[in-house]
Image: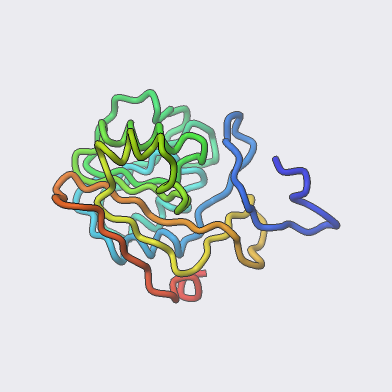
Length: 197
C-alpha cells in the first residue's frame, strides 16, 4: 500500500492502484460509476460480477432486474469466495467488473472466452494506449464501445469518507458479441456523481 496514504491523520485519493496480489488493498467502486453504465448500456440475461469485493457493484447491478452472481478471490464479506476468475471455466451471458489494475489484460482475455453476450470492464482510459495491447487485444478484439466518464472517479480504501477528486481518467470498456463495426466512443453526461453519492 502507498505509504503516503495516511498523512497527518487524513487520507488522500488514489492516483495509482496497486495490484491486490495478497488481498490487503481494497478500493470499492463508487455506486454512481456503476449506475452510469447500466443507465446507458443495456444488459439482457444473467450478469456475473467476478471481482465483487464487498458487493458495492453487485447491489447496483441488481437494479437491472437480471440475475446477479457475485464472486471474488478474497473474502470481503460478500459473494462466493475463493473464485479465481483468471483460472475459471465458468461461462455467463454477461460479465461486469472492476478488475485489479495489473490483471486487466488477463480479465479481457478470460472474459472473451467466458461471456457469451457482453462484458464490461472499468479500466483506466489509458488502457487504450500501448503497442502491445494494440497488437494483441485491440487488433483482434477491439471493444464495441468505450464509455468515458465526464466526472473523475476517486477510489478510496473501504470505510474512508470520500473527499476531493481523483487525477486519473476512467472509462467502461464494453465488448458486445453482437456488435459489428468499429469501436464507438461515447461520454457519460455529468451528474451521476451528484445523483448517487
